[in-house]
Image (cartoon, rainbow, N blue to C red; front, side):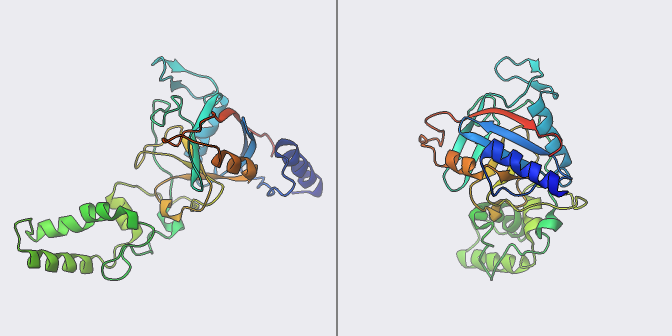
Length: 281
């Protein structure tokens, strides 16, 4: 990038977001401006790592991709995100928007698959079990799921039931865990239904400022997205990360500290005025 172009980009970022120390954008990636009622955010989009996700995001934003309006049930083509709100804000965790209903249950009337490389994230090499009976910290909150999809099938195959004497149940459980010592995070998440494409050139771990798709499980992406307020490595492999805030992180943080009700919805609506691609940035 030439010094003239670098200076022009820096001036643009300061003009839009008032951020003199904003990160220099990668000229090989698209960028988008998210204008909110609390200020502007500029994101760099990983079209090389998540091409379908980025295309969907930008097409909905520009109003070139048809969607089903949940209010009318009719097909519509207009700038999808204009006027929507950040309906879910959890301090220190993330801000979430992109739901036309503003409740967390709405979408564009279609879903599409995740775009995640397990290999790029190291999920194919990291063990799910740490020690004889402890889950990796990244998936420790999914203990019941691990029991259901990894351990229980082994116990069932051995004929262990609730009627089996307690001592035999415990011995079988210990043996099952020993047999799972080499199971990776990819193995576990795949058993949960996640699919990976290791042909992708890379994937990012969700970190502070990451832009990622919100979902209700594997391959349920639509229009909802979230921006991280902190690092969330436990979400790696479960959400498509498709961009990063390069200017306006202070705006993201301001949204993240807005007062919310018991459902994590901002008491005063934080509106997404528009999302548009920034040509030539």
